[in-house]
Length: 453
Image (cartoon, rainbow, N blue to C red; front, side, top):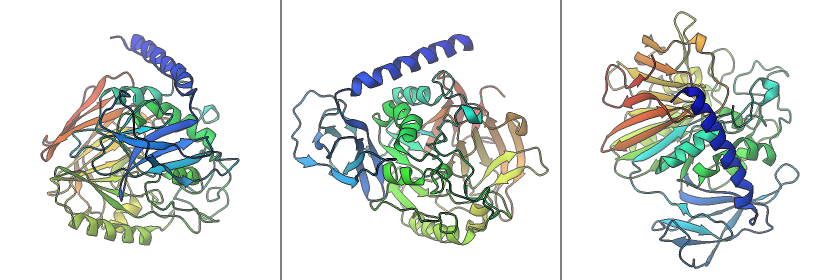
C-alpha cells in the first residue's frame, strides 16, 4: 500500500474513533476505566465526575450478556481537588479468580490479568508537546490515538507503558532530573498539571487500549513532581498508598520503591522508578538514592523463579543517545553509577523508553541482557541525523557490557512481544500498522533486524 494512502486511511480511522467517544460516554459520568497491575495485585481503577464511586461486579463473560451482581462498591482512592483535579479516582481489588469486571454505568467489561501473558504490547513517550513547541497535536499528525487503536486490535494480554504520558501539560522550564541548581532549569512552575491536559494527552487517545488489557504503568520524567507528578500519582501510580510531592520537589525529590510483578512461571517483571535519574554526568548527583533502589532490586530478583525476568524502567541504563561524538554517548550515567553498570543476575531483558525512537541493543559480554528502547509512542521523534540505523562494538562505560550491535528505527510505533517458555519474539509496528523491525531473543549478532536498514 502506498504510504500516502495509508496515511489517509489512518487519519480517517483516527477521526472516526474520536467521533465515537462522546456518544459512547454521553450517558455516564465515568471518564476512564482500566485494570492496573500493582505491587499488591491487580486493581480496577476509574475516574468519574460523579459525587460517589460506582459499584462493580466480577463476571465470567467479556460481553454484557448477563446480569451482574452489584455487591461491591469501589473505594475512593482520591477525592476531587478542584480546580485542577475536579474528579474522583476510584479503585477496587478483585479476588484472584476474577476473569472480567463489570462497572455500573460503564458499557464495557474489563479483562483481568491472565497467568503467563503470551502477548504483550510495550511503548512509551506517548504525549504531544503542542504547537508552541513545534509538534502538531491534531489526530492526523499525532500518532498516539492510532497506536492505541491498532495495539488494542492485536488482543494483548498485557500493556506496558514505559512512562511520559503527559507532555502538553508538563513541557515548561522546570526541574527534569538534571539541573545545575539555578532558577532557570531547576525550578517548579505551574506547567499545567491538571485533568484537562491528562485527558487530552493520555486518557482520551488511550481509551481503546485501556479497555483491551491490564496495564503496567511506569513513571517517566514528565511525571516528576516539578511537572506532571501530582496527576500521575493521583491517576496512574500503582502503589496502594498514593505518593505525595514535597513543597520543593527539586531539593526533596519523590522516589517510589521498586517492585516485582510475578506473572506466572514464564515471566517476572522488576519495575524501577527512574524518573529522577540524571542521564548526563556533572549535572546532578542522584546516585545515592538509586544505589538504594538497586539494592532493593537485587533483593527482589533473588526471590524469583520465573523462566524470564525483565527489568522495566522509563530511562534506559544502556541506550545510545547520539553517535556524533567519539565515543558515542551512552545513557544513563546515574543508573550505571548506582548499579555498578550491572543489572541483577536473573534479568535477561531490559525494557525502557525516554529516547524517542526504537532501539535494540545486543550485548557481546557473556550474561549481559539485551535491551529494547521503545520511546516512539507519539512524542516528537529524536533527530535521526545524530544516530545511524546500525552501530557495532560500543562500550557502555566502566564495568559495563559491550554493545555488539545497536539497531535503531526512527519512527513512531509500538512493540508486540510474544513470549513463552523462556523465549520471546517481537515486531515493532508503525502507526500505519506496518512492521518496521523483527526481533527474536535467540538471534545473534543482533536480536532485532530493521525492515529498512
